[in-house]
Length: 513
Image (cartoon, rainbow, N blue to C red; front, side, top):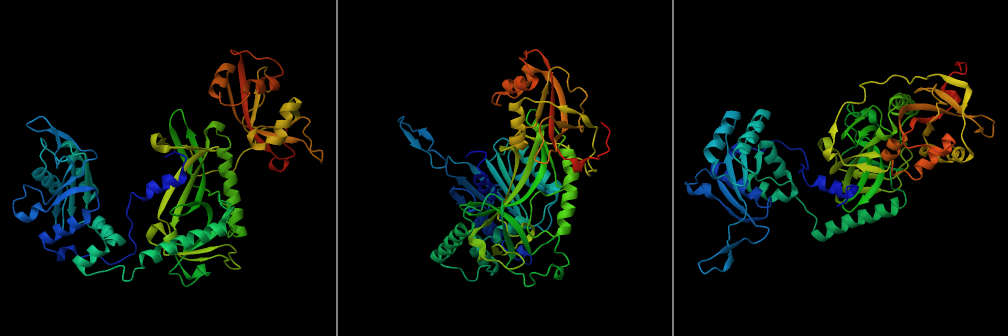
């Protein structure tokens, strides 16, 4: 799978963590006797791996520390020689897993260590180990569990406490187990398989028709809680800001499993050499049609402050951090194509659940220009400040101008954000410093107003080093020589000025030149 495959990566993330369908009272595991608790755990592990066999060893009364023993199916048959030298496959060559079940009400770190010490031999450890208990574990217990098993050479291990067991039992696929052991069914009425598939396909096709050519993060949908009865009056909920029952998002992509929505876009930082990154959530750059004038003005003011920091990072380090969420087609109870006067775009009704709201899974991506950065090998560092001040203006050089040839001037006029570098090998612009503003000669618009640029970053290096760092840039040396006005030598020192466009309303007309 390609690293820039957003839908594929989101699908990967969604399969890692089970989710609870609703919020219910606690399950009383203490009502089960120890053997029945073992039976429950055994039922839950049946589809956890591709097992070759599962053995209820604890019920025999002589389990040698095992309550349940299981063997995975080997990926490939492993040959063994018989007495005549012919190869045959041994039936139990899959990974051995050891599962222990404890119905204790409390298990602390020392008890965890004791259980492992009694059951797992260092000189003959199983491949995998699960400790399931009807209690909640502390962080120290989890740490002890991990360190003890790592020391014994166990390759995979999981600690299932009360919370994890409840999560599993709340999954629709385990509703049968929940009913068998506790007489509770969370799915009292299921659609037939054909009806459920038809429902999902209809939702998908309806969204294709509604959102055709409107994806990519530019078209809004309103996601509404199926349980809500007070729309559109936000004031009816005291916690609406922290726990909204409806919210506008941008439709980004139709994934095979559902609709991907863009939730957030933030200013970010990346250094591909040092392998570090950061972002600030001070302002969400997603424009929402439902924002009030007051909210838009507040966001604009905050964005101006953050840009006053981000714009002055080296261009090679500027990035955007984006967050996406997926709503499954089969969880969309109703799709209202028209919306209403307050939100004149499609409304999607979904059962909001816990902190995840309507979303089945989330995906985060760091983008540098159009390139997606895989953060697996990156370390997060602190680059952005906790708060931002208003951006400052340096010297406004009114009596001086940047002078470019016709080719470069045309690039400046037509390429906008793609053209952001000024080159100088002769010291013509040594007076320029970051945050200074200067006009561009011969750039007057229809009102005879010149264009201005503001220096955002300055560095000096040899021509050969700069071209090597940017060897992917088409005709870079030609552009440098056009700006400088002569041939340049590889060993020459060159000043590189990065800039952004500036406008007269941004600086004081009385600023000194």
